[in-house]
Length: 399
Image (cartoon, rainbow, N blue to C red; front, side):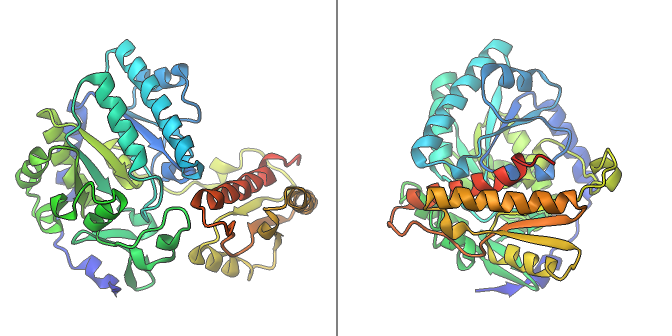
């Protein structure tokens, strides 16, 4: 059931500057390299001046280990993979990371960065990473931390229930369109119950530890640390959060628990990565930063997502008379020849408008396209084919 977003303002304020001092001290004392495996390119939007590697060969990962930053990203894009493909990729990455860590003599931990609305190959990806890490290091991972909080996208976790903000309401995640995803759907908004659902009962909701907002806002670091110290057997920890300061308080206790030898796996949205890395806030990019060379050509806006919120954004954009709109007919995706012809048609329209100094918005059909075979992976393959086509509408531009 939806609740009023006013609840976000109801929690007691705490001194964030004080928390920052403690957090930076704990980050500085931690010498492990944080390896973030990102299943979708949106995951880097909360950070800046952080390396993102799009390949996972030993040379790339070695660069990540040797650079000064305490974390780096590997862009797997695995939300577009089949289960078999992501399993193979994660095994390969885990093996290479272990090899480089041994060479450099550095410890490491994995963050599996995924969707703030709980979609993605879970628990498969973190299970693979856990098995590989334990095999390579001889160490045991005590628990898995889930933190889907993402303030920028209106995703909040309260009393272990994950919400998506729509206007003045917080809607439980399982009641949103995201939960109806043909490949990664789910029925539980309580993250404890979500864990039980996704692990098919291997991990019970009753065994999941919730880090309460009351303890976070009381800055009860000792209690939170004690909760973390008690977790074993890869059991799960849910981080409740309505603001970045909540994640910061949690991370102070987290780093203290890790300093005492606790080892964790992470399945999170983008916010906690920023906090664990001590990445500072940065203003939105300016025109001068983005446009380094003057040109008479127009620009391009690319819209791939078909979700309701994105469709509303497209509708709002259509009120701007200075933008040329080009729709890619995604319903043709099952017909390879027809779809290739459609991509070429859109590309020609784009290029003509851009050369004429117009800004183009290219967008896909505003509905979910499925294979109608009953196989989730067939739906995923069509989705990836559409995604590849959208990328080509930028990659193939000659202007």
